[in-house]
Length: 200
Image 1 (tube, helix red, strand yellow):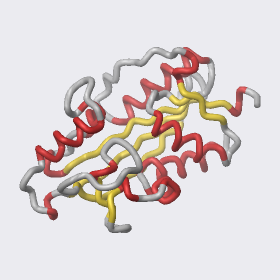
Image 2 (cartoon, one colour; image 1 turned 90 degrees about the horizontal axis):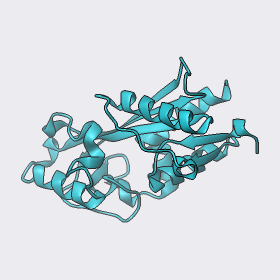
Image 3 (cartoon, one colour; image 1 turned 180 degrees about the horizontal axis):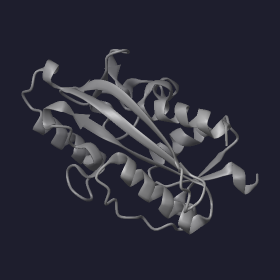
Image 4 (tube, helix red, strand yellow; image 1 turned 60 degrees about the vertical axis):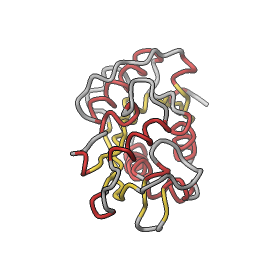
């Protein structure tokens, strides 16, 4: 497989790597984690999902010489004025675990009725062909739902166990992977990206 079919994923998240590898396989792309190239993590100093995704993609391109795909995503909770947002992965602190973040979110929303627990997952994908790419591909996906009172389900990662999906009457962590990959924020953004990549 030549270099034009390889994409570096600017993330060390194994859950994301699994999802992207499956979804991009249909276009004959091989998705490689940036850890394969010892790419150092870059500080996410952006004030939005798209700014952080661009920082990560450019960093991966610079260290590998390959096209890079970066995803910045998170959950926005209306009752928390859009928090945790870009800080979703470190909501409970810099080295917070998924479980720690979930516990903090549920605590912050404790006592709120269901109709005030509306939330959405946001995903911003950035694809850069090289470090100085002046026109990166940018695709967004949004997945509406609400925050449950407690965790449900064993699939997925991050906030999936507390994110209720109205269309399927279950949590994101109770959906089969093939269903989640179609309807999730990341699935929506990636579907748009696949269309764009076909034209490259």
